Length: 386
Ligand code: FE2
Image 1 (cartoon, rainbow, N blue to C red):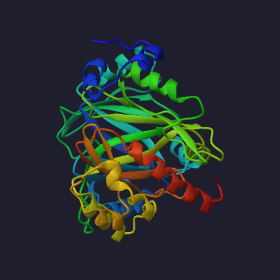
Image 2 (cartoon, helix red, strand yellow):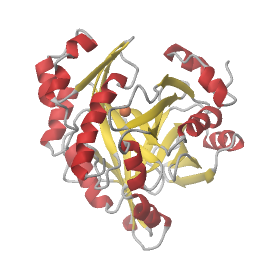
Image 3 (cartoon, helix red, strand yellow):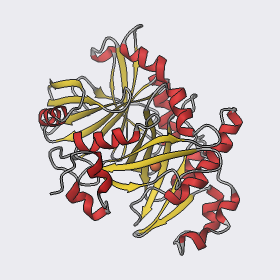
């Protein structure tokens, strides 16, 4: 097995998708994303938004009624995706500080593991900063072990070992029964989650995921690939061994005006999760349903579709239908993908979602970046931050 010891090793590698299964180290086997937890100002109202607009289902709840004194958490589920929305109930704690500094945003990207104690030991001995020592939590439904490490900014990974637990979510949570249950919109699982980091920090975090977590780099863009006239960024994609966890890392690059990554860093006050990409099997149905429910998507200019078939070749979908929904299309060696990005879902221009449908392609829409960033720049112009 190839060993990734330092950044030079990572950069020198020829990372094809077939190779990642060999290149990624197996000291940290990950079964999938367990949950994503956002610290928000008002979890009750955020939960209503994600149910109504995104089709998430009421799953579990913890708060005063369950013995949690200082915070409240709502767990929402759609197919394999779990969102946890948490709000502090008292002043002055770390949750308040997080929300004050960052606004609503992702605190925890939780990863499902067989052994949370080993995951903690393997990553911390390779240099990860501890966030949570391995901790056993239990109730009448069994027990879990969770542990955690810091990643970029104040974002953390929590390792969740749940093979001895049969409850609804975690010990301390009860089933959340609601009379209000909007239908799902077809979101299936988290395809990837993107982190924005500061100037010249991308390679440090690529090295972190390589060295500390045993990930391998699968795609490389440089700033020439993803620069527009006014803004630029650099991006590298890190994947774990079985390909279930993919974390693209962006850093700003010099353009004529402010990079959208820099705008994010300014408003989030540091590095953080930029977008969560969620997979669907029918992007037209998902996007039109979400739009009907009030989700705002990035505007895609009609001219984007003028040379579409020349650029991506034959596709199954009707181009006029895709155009009417503003859906982006890109192709790589293995197939094509359809994707669309929401506007930020919070008031600060920070976190947004991507809806993605893969038809063979395993890449991330490189060919769409230019079209996407031109669209984002029009939004930035409207906010006066370009
Ligand atoms: Fe993405």
